[in-house]
Image (cartoon, rainbow, N blue to C red; front, top):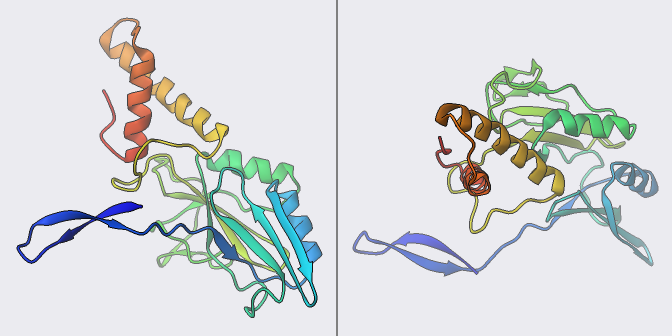
Length: 226
């Protein structure tokens, strides 16, 4: 259970419990089940299931570090193959994500950015009316750098680089979906701590506490330590 804030008749806010609703499955419409299975396996995603019966087949894959999975198969959906667009994969390093896919033999676009922070689909070169601009966001602002790729049917996927969450987007303890995400956070904390030591003019023996504070604040979107 989680809690949300609501206003009562007096105008005061109170926290009430809400039933957890966890998004776990996204259905991908495909035309050739085995071809799609080979493609998503090539991405390095975990194969969770391949079940079949009379007139149906269901395959499930989970991206590394993700709590949500995708399913596709035979008689799974009536949607047209390739009609799934704007499927987001959140990464902490856009260039590292691109290089990994390229190394696996997957065609992926160059990194790009635009005026908005939401992209409408792989084949649409716009971001809220602004054309794609080549290269990652110049300031490497969180939520602002993208890369795209498609599966064999044309279902469109997007990498989006997020290093600092907007306030209120993270509840409870800071968690990481993979060791690479944690390593990236530690590198950012180390770089920031190096600048901190330059300003203070000495070695900080309490650097583990400083790192931890930095990472927690970064994930919650709070002001970072000086």
